[in-house]
Image (cartoon, rainbow, N blue to C red; front, side, top):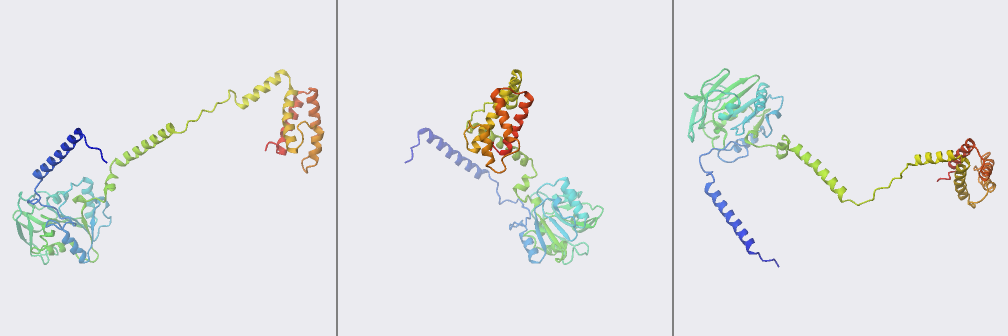
Length: 387
């Protein structure tokens, strides 16, 4: 059973509902009217009157090698022959690098079909007059020169076109009026640029008007061997979110956050792990202890005492390995060792007896004591008594 809301919670809930309703009312009241005269752009994805899905689908059905281009101009192929790039109604501003790469594409033998005032700015066209605001009338333009571009296209129809008022060097005008050209061609290196004053001849609404379809196909050339790239990059389409983010500082920021998170995890793990007491280190290291003890024995002249300690340890380990009493004399140890093949070494029994006698009478010099201690150490390793 849920607990009832108190008065304060009810007031907060009612206030939230009121604010939601008020914001919804404002959104409906002040939202732009999408049914006005604002024009869209000829995207190959759009089936709206201003879209260009019909033209794109027609090229696919006619056998053209057409594909949508959603990458920046720097990714255009280096070998541009028999490649047509369509930039119809660009809406995203271009950078200097984009313009430089487009120029290289055309100079390398590619063909660029570009439209509108924005397209004219991308190719550096001067004296291009934009159409008057809110003008949506269709106008007809006749072909002015016979050429492959005007074949089967004596007249074309454009909606609110821009005009290229003055022709420059290398410009060939094919359609237009007294105000300027509406279709013009610029030669640049091995390629060419075709500029239209309007997107309308290739839109879903305008492709069937007059000879617009013939003009569009003439600009592309024959289907066999022609590759067509329909640009969507300047319509705002990008390969993906991660492709966009990879060109920003965000990946480095994520890397820094990961490093910070790793440090936090390590810090938390160290603070939240099991508590263990710190090892208590001896005041002297083993080597220092040995040196100290050796100095004491040397100062006292107790070589027999040092030999006794070494012999007692060796005697204990050997007796345990042979299975005899720890108080057994050296002769008994030597007798038991003869019973084991390969254990008895020449002079071993005599060495034990001499050490035992020296320890018993506490009479031995330092050089002799050191020699015997080294021999006991070697016997310990030889018989594997420390294992």
